[in-house]
Each structure stands twice: as C-alpha cells, then as structure tokens.
Length: 193
Image (cartoon, rainbow, N blue to C red; front, side, top):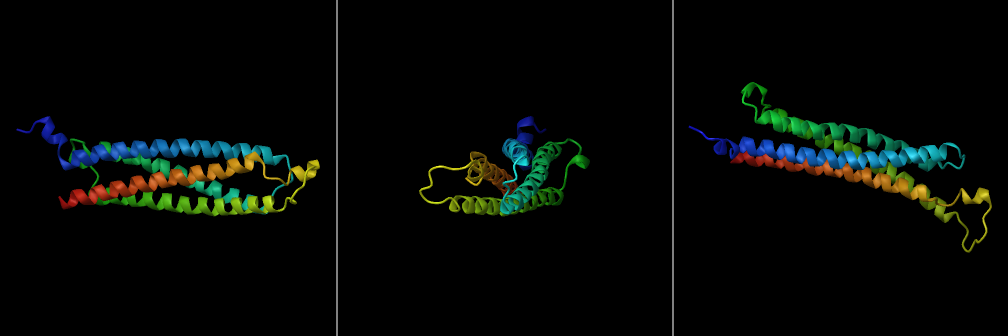
C-alpha cells in the first residue's frame, strides 16, 4: 500500500513540481520584462513618429528589437507550457503523461526560441547603441547654445530608455534559457538515478 508521501517523493512527482515552479518563475519574469520593454518601444515609436530626426541605425535596431520581442512571446508561451507539462506529469492516467522525449523536445524548443530571440535582440542593441554613439560624437565639444534643429541631434532620455528596453528583453530571454537548461539538466539527472 502506497501512501501519498511516497508518491510525492517519487522522481516523477519531484520533476513535475520543478517544472511547475521553474515554468511559473520563467513565465512571470519573461512576461514582466517583456511588457516593460514593449511599453518603452511603444512610447519611443509614438514620440519619434512626429519627428524626422530618425537615424538609419536606430530604425534597423528597432526592427531587430521588435523581432526579439516577438520571439519573447514564443518564449513566454513555452514557459507556460512547462507548467502544463508539470501538471500532466502527475496525472493519474499514464496516457496523459508526456514521455521524457516529448518533454525534452519542448525544453529544446524553448532553449532555441530564447537563444534566437536573444541573438535578434543583441543585433538590435548593437545597432541602437552604435547610432547613439554616433549621435553623441556628432555634438561639438564645448558647444553651449543649441538651435531646436541641433537639439534633436542630441541623445535624448528616450534613447537611453530604448537601450534599457533592449537590456530587459535580453534579460527575459536569458531567464528563459536558464529555466530551460536547468529543467533539461534535472530530467537527465533523474534518468541516471
């Protein structure tokens, strides 16, 4: 006769609990950082839509940053999927439980999605920071008074916020990578024991 504590100490139950915990941590971390980054990019687009002082590097960077945010949406979905896998692993019906191979494939997909998203976001960050560096270097040394046209060529606070949004997106993808790798490691450790 097995009692509930024996079931809860089984490797499958422990892995299920870890999947739910890491899935929720990864989900909320990515969601919060992604929403903040998307909000900053939205404010940037609204503010810059009226001005013609665009820099080609910034446009290129924003394009890749937007692709990184879209990819983050996939990472958030997969983090939520981890929580569902955790729930399925403790199902009383063996038909509902995913196999180790299916579970590993979902983790591999999560890892790939977050790595690709991180790469796209880093391309965007490089383009944006490069264009901001060019803006900062174009300001003459010792200049005191600026015309309204010259003010638009200065680095603005919103430009720095866009860099922060990129950092948030990279951090969100990093959280997804760490969660996927950690769960992948736990699955392989449970196979050996």
